[in-house]
Length: 255
Ligand code: HEM
Image (tube, rainbow, N blue to C red):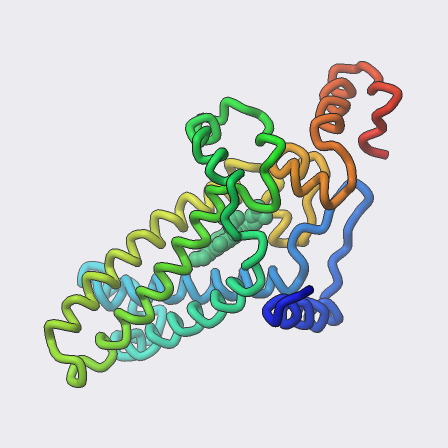
């Protein structure tokens, strides 16, 4: 039985999908529908605006360089909480959108035990149990959820210092800075992982699709569910094809 969140999310996907269809070619799988992509890039836009305006306001040596982008110091100060609010609201919708695939499972604990292999890139393929997101992606996601809550709570006294008093505002500054640091480090790693480290991933957030080859390599369990085919067999068949041998009779991985 579907929950209220799932029903809301399905309706939103359907509505956005009416205006922006995603074309899935024969050797591809649908990964992120238009609704998810709109949310993700709205989150990214608000995040970058909040980050730049935040740096401009709170870092004296960046003040001169960054405040002109937003029309001067006072406007930057005025806009920063609104950019941040935009980020929090969009990410709240993104959280509803990804609640199910981001839920933590026993397989994620298994994945973490072999995180060294992942970082060192010793294994070409992810283990069979890796589903729509791996544990690293889930940790990043939940770190953003936590940081967004901290940003919101700590930002309120910073906007209304007279109401809350100095000690609360100072605690707010420290929490705000810690959350910003977590987000910044995560953001840098995320851009690297989403572009250069794993070629083909960015396509999922621009066109909405990935190559089947990408799916069976990085998310075998999801590949199995989405295509009804065996990720390992298709991978091995592709390797054989590359080596110039015909695939086994029982396996016809791609047209
Ligand atoms: C501006 C540069 C960015 C690029 C190039 C980028 C790229 C991507 C890509 C390609 C994916 C899909 C990964 C997959 O399907 O496996 C993704 C997912 C995601 N993005 Fe971004 N993104 C950017 C900014 C952001 C920002 C600013 C945030 C939030 C602060 C964010 C949060 C996420 C999250 C939580 C996911 C799902 C988990 C993951 O894949 O790590 N992204 N991003």
